[in-house]
Image (cartoon, rainbow, N blue to C red; front, side, top):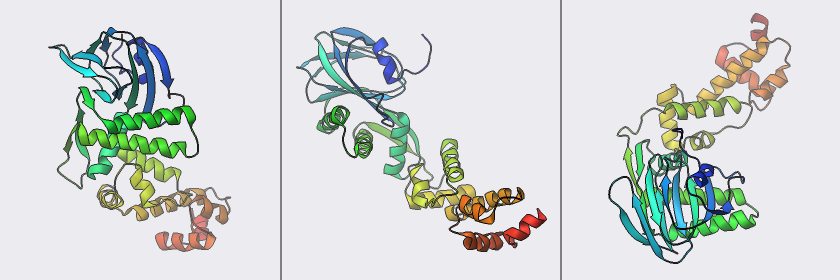
Length: 293
C-alpha cells in the first residue's frame, strides 16, 4: 500500500460491504454521502483525507475501537453517530450486521468554516475520534442529505451548501479543539493569497466586490479589508483598480485594440469612465499612452 491519504471512494477497499448510497458523482463541494450495509468484521481504517461521520440506521449493537492500544467499547444504533478523524489509523470491530450512512467532510471546508466562525486564522484544528454520541443535529442533516441525493429538486446546490456549513459549524462547536492565531491582523497564508489573486485576475472584467473577495477566504468583509491592506499595501478596491489599469496598459501596447474593447475587458462601465480613471492613475489619456508605448 502507498502512503497517500484515502479518499471516500477508496474506503470500500478497506471496509468491504454493500453500497446503498453514493453522492460522489453529484458535484457536491467538500462533502460526500455514502451508504453501506456491513456484515460483522474487524476494519482497519487507513489514514483518510477527510473527516468521516458514521450515522447508524440499525438496531443497537456494540462497536469497539482501538488506535493500537487498549480497546474502547460503546453501544451504537439509530440516533447515534461515530466520528473518525482524518490522517490517522484505527481499527473498528463489530459483530452484528449494521446499516450506516457515511458523511465525509474535507479539511478545507472545516478550515474555511472556522475562519468565518472565529473571524481569525486558526493555527490548528483537531477533531478526535468519537466512538458513540447521541447527536440529533447530525442525524437530521444526514436524513436531509439522503433526501436530496434521492429526490433532488429546485435549489439543491443551495440546500447542500447549507447542510455542509451546518455540519461543519456543528463539528467545530461540539467536537473540535481549535487553536487561534494570537494576531488578528496576521497575513494571509499562501493558499489564501493565491485564491485572492486568482479571483481578482479572472474577474477584472466583472463587477468584483469586497464580499466576493472575502468569501473566497472565509473572512468577514471588515476583517478581510483590514488584513488585505496589511498584506497588499492597498485597500481591496484600490488594488483591483491598479490591476485593471495594468491590464489596460498591456492591451494598449498591442496597438490595435479599440479603446471601447479595452474599457469593457478591464471592467470599466464605458470608454469615458475608462479614460478618466486611466488619466487619473497615469497622468495620460489612453490614446496618448498608446502613442508613447
